[in-house]
Image (tube, rainbow, N blue to C red; front, side, top):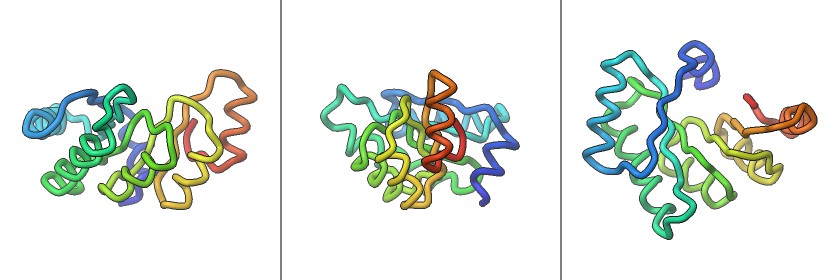
Amino acid sequence: MDTLKFIEENRLVAISRQVYGDDLLESAKAIIDGGIKLLEITFDQADSDCLKLTPSSISLVKKTLGDKICVGAGTVMTVEQARAAKDAGADFALAPNVDFEVIHEMKKLGLISVPGALSPSEVASAYKEGADIV
């Protein structure tokens, strides 16, 4: 799958926060049935288990649904989270901010990098550092 092309073609991303296991899997199946083919599973920064819960959820959805859905990690704030997302099978990673170290790691890992930016300068900086979508 060409992830960047898939994202550009499908555009609408469903976001899952604090939903795991069978509930998440059933939700992912439902959004596919509804025509949505992109799913972001977020890292909950307040949860000490987020480095376990989010990657295991990404892995579950990817292993069960394969290329029926493109799965990304959301709220990726650290290099460690980017690595965990990639190891779990994530296709892309979103961040709420522009962190050059995280962008560089995402690209090194082969993930589509999607940081969030507020100002035109942040947008330009993120693209300069390798972000695919800002």
